[in-house]
Length: 330
Image (cartoon, rainbow, N blue to C red):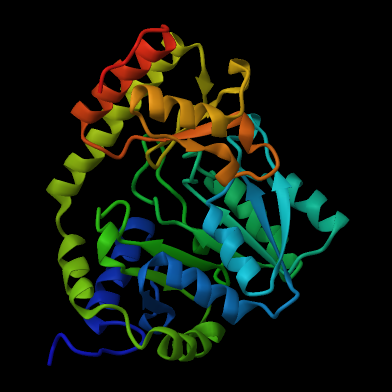
């Protein structure tokens, strides 16, 4: 049965197509044995953390970050070392930030995300190479979350394995390929980790969803439709950036992904309170920054603009009215 259980590593044809993707996008020749198809990126993070670290090891992650990183690490008995970032670096860790953190408290792993959730900022190729050089010198395992690759508004995204063949890369079909419910992603693993990852995947997940893998393979060649999706995100981004001045709020213009990380500290209430108030009074859902940064997140909120443009315009109209003190009907 072609739709029954498959290989724990994933369909050969899909792994071949992903290898072709890296040749096209990054001019890299990736051995098929290094490509692991996963049940979404969530499964990939579990496999990566289990394969690379022992209970009690420490993983460094920059704040703000995707909250599931912290939750998965904690569930697996790993320690977390936060690296605080600033708006000046796009809330991305610099090589100097990482060096200072390591000198203060050495860690075994570093997790980076580019473009990032919740900010949408990108680590440049130069900065990525500098970070990788330090990590290689100190035997720090780099895990690079690249699930928002190809969703970049200016410069292309650099994959971590361009400057560090021992980095572990995690990607997904959920974002650029718009396959959120299909639960299929992939990893590029260091050669010495491939067999360990395969054994863990077999025992935890049997195999990735077979139908989803066939669909993902087709999706990788749907360039025209995917380009239209991206154009929608780009238009929505511009509409929201223009709206910020009406609300007297500030955010870094995102380099990629489809989020705005907005400083709301001037409003005089926590982002948790603000999000609840706007939801109940204006019918617009946003996410409190505390989910992404347990230290300073109440200063920020995140807006996702991965919807059709008419819905974004409706949300902006409601927020314009709410910030102007008007009653909003919805």
